[in-house]
Amino acid sequence: MSENSHVLYAREPELGIAEFRRVLVESGLGDTRPVEDDARLQAMLSGANLVLTARLNVEGRPLIGVARAITDFSWVCYISELAVSQSAQGLGIGRGLMDEARRQLGTSVAISLISMPDAVGFYERIGMMRMPDAFWFSRKR
View 1 (cartoon, rainbow, N blue to C red):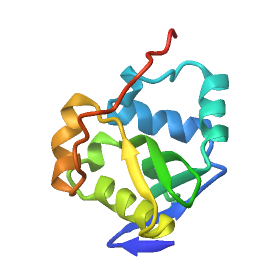
View 2: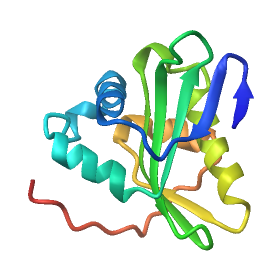
View 3: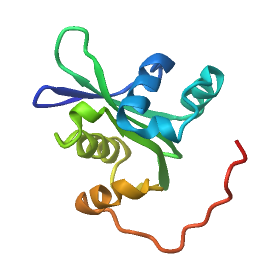
């Protein structure tokens, strides 16, 4: 675990769905995620093998950010969500979560993700390279 100002970043494989849902909703990602489907949220968390959290270092340690990913810890990591509560956006929490992912994965693991349109500038600012040759089969539900 590393500390950045008053924020604690940690690997948290047992993150509960209530906190996960809250941050998804507060971040704006709740509009594009199945936040009303507890079983699906649980499956999303259980299927991720890297769940990183950002918590305020105050009593109760409230969750303000989460990065959920799938990785082989050797070659590539896919970030499924990078969500930061709106009240904490612009404070470096997203960058801190990405830095923590890079620290835990090491320099030999590439990180990829699909950005929401309004977050593209953030990923460019933190130094991620835009890839024009990504492909997608859309989900049905």
